[in-house]
Image (cartoon, rainbow over all chains, first blue to last red; front, side):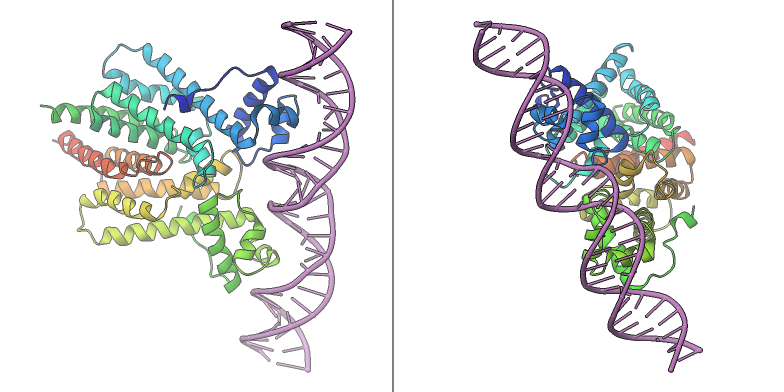
Length: 191
Length: 191
DNA sequence: ACATAACCACACCGGTCGGTATACTCGCAG
DNA sequence: CTGCGAGTATACCGACCGGTGTGGTTATGT
């Protein structure tokens, strides 16, 4: 799992600009909507360099997803560290999600990518699965309870979808409320 | 809302074949991945007829989404009617979802469409919003409680995402379990 | 007999798609 | 001085993109 989300070795300067440009364009407009010509032009380099560095558009897409996963995970972990250790951190995930979604109005990059490459053998597919599994594992670690973790993970994914595709930005706060209730349900279950 | 999900007037035979072919191709491969030439060929007709009937690819996409919404809603209502009236019907939504997802392995058509057309003024966007709002209203009607309905709706959307993009097909049953717990939480809240 | 709508066949438009090839310049390490 | 990896510039490839135009056929209804 960890290797699937490895952002890979350091890139050459032009390679770095290419993956940066591709990441923003892919997220904002979708994968198929963005051509390699536009990526190269935005990065201030050429298609030749793109294919020299990454071999194919599909590989560049997979790298985009790996980088995106690492970025979100680093953001989440950093924000969670500011909270006192304990079950409250599982709740704080929803605060971090709200903060993240304030900037990222196009929703979950992995869900979006699956919409375009699902049902194929695209090299980005394992990255998508690994990211969702990482979030589940994170909830398990934070909640210390598999059943509760699944419950929280479902609320988390639902909130992301409804806040973006559903056009209901306030839903993240309601998801947090639901998470609180899930916690009290766990407490009662364990009595 | 209801008019946004109106499938529209009856179509001519070739128009009907076109929207049928487009629906399956769009859902299976994505919107941008499917060209109008392929749609026309699959329907056994021509591009000319497509543009005579629908005016543009975007309008055909919007119609695809409206039809998809109507089809899911009819399926859900029919299945729910088999259950005795009462709060148990809100739980049955998760059984119906599991049944539906067994055939539809490409996830939520509306979330997928948003991944491709979000951030634009595509005529399909209001349809996506209307469908999500319809599901929320349905949960409110079934649960008779806004807070509980939001909780259930979040679990429902999360289950759809994780069962498909997340590659965790068993998650729908866990979402149902979580929904049961949300119900008992409501009961306790109302005492 | 005539109009009309629906449909079909096909050619065409400018533009973009992912991907390849050739040739050149630069900085740097041996 | 030389070799080499990185980057640039540009042209090219066949295929496909969404969309338009022309002309002709069939069926229905008046």
